[in-house]
Length: 385
Image 1: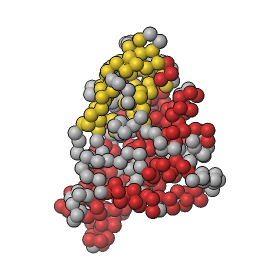
Image 2: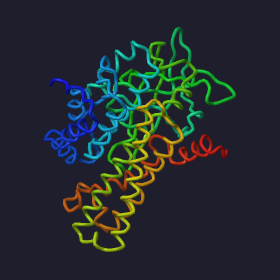
Image 3: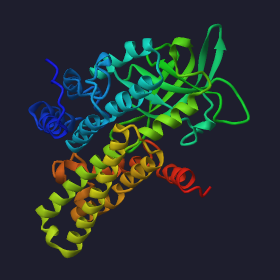
Image 4: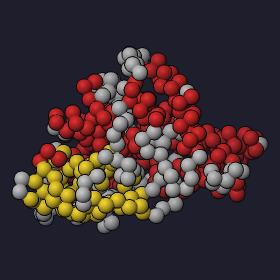
């Protein structure tokens, strides 16, 4: 399939992307995912390959690395339309938005050439190994070690609550390469091949559809070619890129899709005409419109080269916090039917609400917890602490 020509008109591009996500391929993929039994989950979907063939999977990457050289605006359009269509986006977020962006920002030319085109085509997947059993939001407490071994290192440690590592080819792994008084110092980012001897991946029990993983790393040898950025400088890279790249677009898109389902159910059950339900849903709609405006301002900041880490934290926090009231409204509309799973033939809206009830807490945790976002706002923005 030939690549889609560059478009300078933002809205024209959105129409093309929206048309793609409304097409037969996406409908077939979503129908297939809906039939997955418990324990099955999506990985490298055909949707990703089709996006990659068009250059849309990583649309803002340079052409030599598999993108189309467009702006963060077009990348946000793809992300937003993907989430609004209900396409599982974890592989895209991990491979493109996190690992890919780290390599673009801090990777060597060899790393970029080796990994980025395959990620952009949807032929390879990546995951992230940051969180540990005793180090969650505070990565300065991580204990995974990279011990010197000749001209390289041996990695030892345990990572937890990572997603899609069972499908991924490589992971961006944070490990300690030196000790010091300040915990943030001495952290290095490595590209860890996940099929290496010494890497053990097993599931961590949870209530959501897509599994969390425990990854044990036992003596995997890495070299200087596997280091992303500078040795001992991983904390700065993590802090800078993750803060700048938060927009809230994906969180808003998922909340909007869920609210649209709840509104449709309210109309079908006659509860939309009820003043209590109607007023509540109108309020939630207004909140999500505000969230949408905030998120797109963050995208515009990125596109114009003026990112605002504090405003980005505000946008992510606000978008992430909308899920709980939307879920509550959905349960009030559907009552006990709202807790029927997609595997029950009588589940309203194909069990979308129930699945999101189980997934709900993750929206306040992913990409930085709500508490960490408030901390960044209080310290960096308001100077309170």
